[in-house]
Amino acid sequence: MELKDIEALIRIFEKGSLAEMRLREGDFALSLKKTSSRAPERQAETIAGTVAEPAPAVKAEAGEEIVTSPIVGTFYRAPAPDAPPFAQPGSVIRAGKPLCVLEAMKSMNQLDAEFDCEVLRVIAENGALVQFGTPLFEVRRV
Image (cartoon, rainbow, N blue to C red; front, side):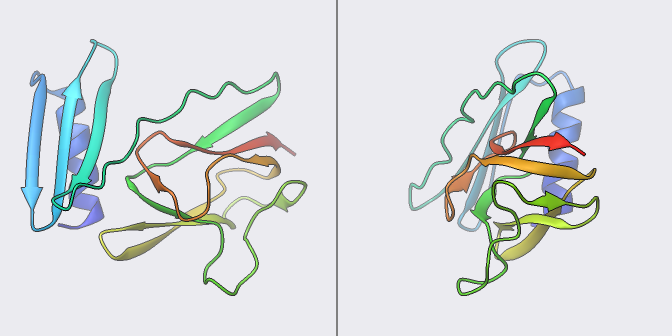
């Protein structure tokens, strides 16, 4: 299943009247459950039993923003294990430039900055399994 297909399923689920949906394809499983009328709870797991933990609550200070994961996947700060990180505290990232890489279903997805920003804090751990909405960076627009 392609990332675009997963994203389309999530959008359809969010707009629909189903309260819960489960999908399993190969070693990938996706479970969506609406816990309130506002936002569905998302959880992904493999048959082997690895589970994405719920996104931790992170509150930004005034003037600061939290960049969150748009997908379920593995968070990597650099394009390769021996390469320097794309973003670290104090670095300024221009709009359209990479912040990190998210690996989903053996596909490497570069997450680019949506606006010029200064990285204040890297929240996620390198190599961590993240879910949709997991806080990754705390940034300030520049």
